Image (cartoon, rainbow, N blue to C red; front, side, top):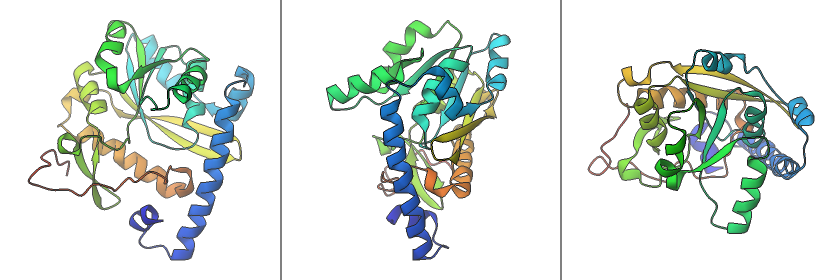
Length: 251
């Protein structure tokens, strides 16, 4: 409710409570859907999660790798398996390992069922190195809370400064591959649609922080359209900006 109050100060308490109720319904649905991913067939997944992959595959035909950014919108676990089935690329997904080893093994099993390879954010350089010279689709859930806010990109998110991880943008600028954003839409219970949108086809040409700003704008736009489909249960605004410590401000 605190998150919703920051994001939607213009809405009444009752309106925010309605969003919260819808969010919890979506969260439970997502939990059940994620369990189902352990056994779901390719055909059934493609029925429940639709996406036109011709845009992203067009870069493969040109011999280019791509980088994909997305936020914590339901159901990102469906998206992970769907891109592995339908993309022409070798799909590499950057993830944060779970502290519980048993749960981490389960999630690795379900996330790699249809060909995607998982790369631990904590070991990114080592695990990504073997794929540098091959054509790949590198995926970041890029709205993670920054573990080290002192070295993060700080930007306004619904009017309040928050830190964003720098890894996705730094990787994009280093490789200079086209960067795409994935926009999610929950059509009805258990059924989703997604669309790829271009953030930049030459990220190295942008000023530092601009790529992150563009992604934030897309996330805010998606939240405004479907506020209950975002992961409100994590504290997005838990850090306060200190200009004496936090130098990487994205205006």
